[in-house]
Length: 109
Image 1 (tube, rainbow, N blue to C red):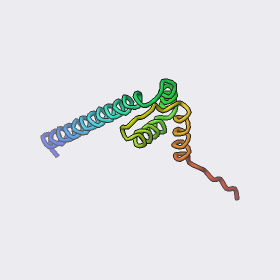
Image 2: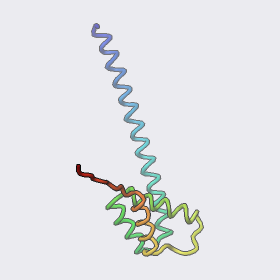
Image 3: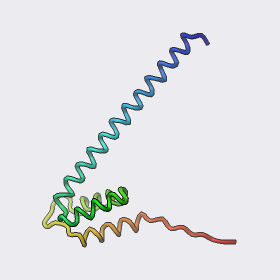
Image 4: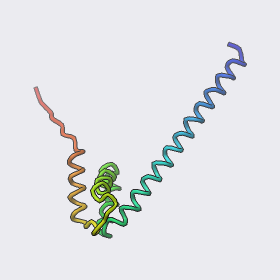
C-alpha cells in the first residue's frame, strides 16, 4: 500500500467515526428531550410529596423510576381527575421494582 491509499483509508475511517458521533449526539439529545417531557407531565400528575419521592427514586434507580413513570402515564392516559399521592406512587414503584427484580438461585454440590 502506498501513502495515498493509507490516507484515503484514514479519511474514510474519520468520516465514519464523525458520522457515528453525530448520530450518538442526536440520539442522546432526543432521549433527553423525551425524559424532560415525561418529567414535565409527571410534575402535573403527582403531588409535591410524590414528586419528591419520584425524584429520590430516580436518583437511586433511573430504570425503575422511568418504568414507574411510564406506567403512571399509561394508567392516566392524559386524563387526570386527581393527583397521584405519595402512597399511590409507593405502590407503583414497589410493583415496578418487584417486576424488574432478578432472583438468583445458588446451589452447592
